Length: 263
Image (cartoon, rainbow, N blue to C red):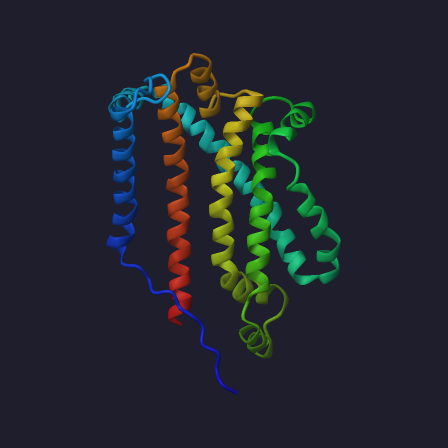
């Protein structure tokens, strides 16, 4: 029987991986500057890059800003961790049992039709205001993406490798810890990467609806005072927060994929 060849994506050089987003960022800043210079847009509608930079340099000197950043980071991380702790065992159960998968998958899909913002009033009634309710909202948002990514990763494991491991005596917990989880780890990390990004969104939405002391509350104050430049700064910091964790997990995932391809 002829062997089946699969396409292996060549690992991009590190300088190119760094230069590409930097060049895109510079291009977007230039486009932003040109738009503010060549149109009659008011600063309260769209601030200039210079105004944004000056405000950013001013804001990052305030300790209260970093306390807000840390609060939102805590909420997002806790929500992602709790969501993962529920989604990962459930994904393994879906992978191992066809009957369980047939029973729960339709309901799991239906939950995605419910907007997260619609759950906030219920969470307030059930849990109350504060950190617990926001973490619960983040958990609900990240649960499904982590579940789906992990399930897909487990279902696409190499059957020949698993059969060889079974012939060598692997089964049950040893099969899970030494074969299935390591092979599915890139997909699990991809789910965590996307899940954390959504968890930041959930934390901000939760604070705007349920109150708090994080970036969502800061955004609400800036919105009410029509502080557009301040909103740009806050949104930029949220993007930087999400991108930092996203990049760290992506680099781990990328390294694992490259190791698997090279074997």
